[in-house]
Picture 1 (cartoon, helix red, strand yellow):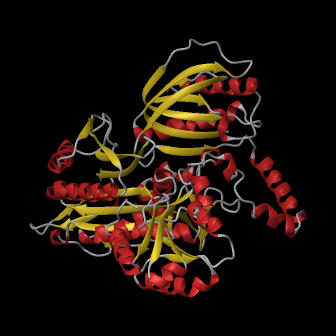
Picture 2 (cartoon, helix red, strand yellow):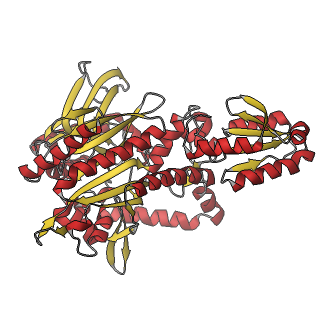
Picture 3 (cartoon, rainbow, N blue to C red):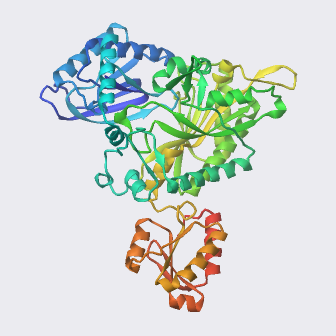
Length: 575
């Protein structure tokens, strides 16, 4: 049994069309449920009702942490290729529904056998999205199954093993829409996916250029506002994850290893490691605020059925920052983050909306803490002059938050940046500072992201620009196209001058026709094609063609380089 578990603000679904013979008879009308844990549930061929009960038991235990007592069982066959028969699946779902009600859970079930339209709003806290995988096999059967697999592995030849592990992603680019980032990623040689590491992208040189430009831009802006930069280990001892609560509440989404007979977790989040750096020595109020940024590689287990290019992966880089401060500093620090994110998004031409979520009904912390935290967020938003929507009662249980919803060129919205005030980590890890009164005080902690996941943000950008990156982001910014071999030397001289100015340039010295060379450069979506022939060489000029097809003749190379360098430095969106 495979389950995708989402803690949701709401889910709204509407049965549209019967898909199986045993589809339940239901009234065709929209159903909306709020503040609920949704279990997208896929029943597999070997599942039993006992497996379903285990899933409900785990859900109940999980909901205690959220102080929620409402679940929706939503049949979702897309998580597996090993499906149970429709009759068996419906029977197990009904038994899960009955068992949930027996346990005193407000249990709902979406109709089985129907194609359904649905919309869902998932909460923004770290435990809101989890995947679960259950097996009906007992220990003996599992051991037998493992033995069979090991035997099969031994019987496979080294060639067969190689061919299996070297397989690329099953979906070819031809099966995808033209503006899909997976298709464009292959076309532009940005990244690829392979069976040896499912859900973990392999970034090629072109993709790394884009990622490094994004990180370089954010680093530049962070330096202006006195951020430090840190890096924490990928693997941390179990004790840290027990203190943070991840060991109990997030374990099924983590990967583990054993070192010197001790249990270690591969980090799904950067916070505990960052806190260890803060705790390394005693901090005074004079050291605050302390802004520590990290481009941290994290791993989270996701079901194979929900993996989707760069949008849903198992391995990704978070542009995290943790800001440690006093309560009096909340407003100014939030305002600083808002200004940073605003500038970053506007550089890409993104429109965005702000949402302020306040104290939920079930929360931790004192009234005084929540009043100070919400006032700090609200004051900062009003001081920014930006419009925002108030979302009462929808903050995380550990603190209020501001979410940034980005709108791309296709009208889709993405929640990327977030500013969250955390009242639990300082308590759990006992992180303090020495105040002016020479006494120990708890710090206030902010979790902040700008892009969120760099991989996901890059996927959004690829589709937003349809692969036509602004010149400052483009892996190759200029390609030189000599008309004939005798113009190669002149073209190489111009290439050398471009490289001296830090411009990413290539040269096409192939024997292909001019039309082919131009077409190839356009397919690679290179911003500028510089064509040189006898006439250009004689006049000591170049002909410049942009990727939109506009051609300018008799351009002085020095002027072209000067103007291009200016557009790159200004991060211009114009070509």
